Image (cartoon, rainbow, N blue to C red; front, top):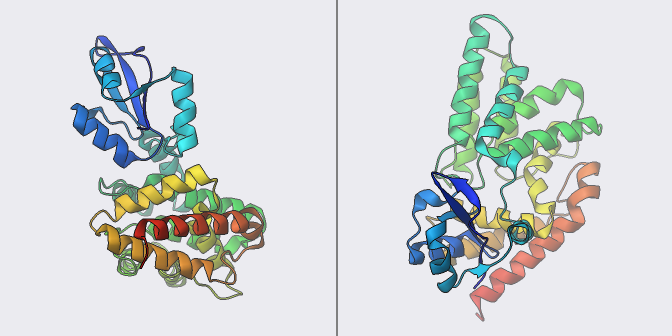
Length: 308
């Protein structure tokens, strides 16, 4: 059992609460909560809140009692912790400011621009999304900006790259290839008349690139966007592990054996790419770690599948 609980010291609603977490997976956490009769409404993205009168009962059910500081460390090491900056309410405010800076400042065009931004944030906040959600959008935009500062992106290409970041998973139904195409068409429809036709076409082209993450050598804009989308592969293992769990949740409609086979095929394709990352900065920062992470995940998938 890798379920942990801290003492009930967190006040709310006239009582005090414990936090219940898993060091292994959200699936294990949800399974424990169901068996213990914890309400789904008590789940808060990376933990369950349990009232004080349930503490001993949950310990008896197998939750390991630990101090609050230790529980935080366990959650951080697991890669499942949702940091404050990743909370939807904080992300929403920052992303609204980012979107406003890309468009017109006054008049009817500014109003239409604001409406498009609200629609995109609603898309990225859909309840069926796990990985392809607001934190991923924020990460892609942040990495694009960092790569630009590192000299990987000429200034005139900045806006279409950032717009493509906004649109690249605006439509997400768990249908690889089809989602990117519909997202690109959405960009063409919503940006038409607000931006020049060439900039709209470039934004849509970049969105379509994220279906296969392949670019030409001289495609600076495509290289930055694709590298930003794949940055997650080069994170520390706990964060990579959280990413893989969230992706599995996004594809919950796919049976385990089919998902494992499809995921393994994706990993082999990426590992077989001569240059996983296109920009010099990304190769230096993430290439080696990304390959180790993917090889480790692929080995786990093969172990789960067992002998052929």
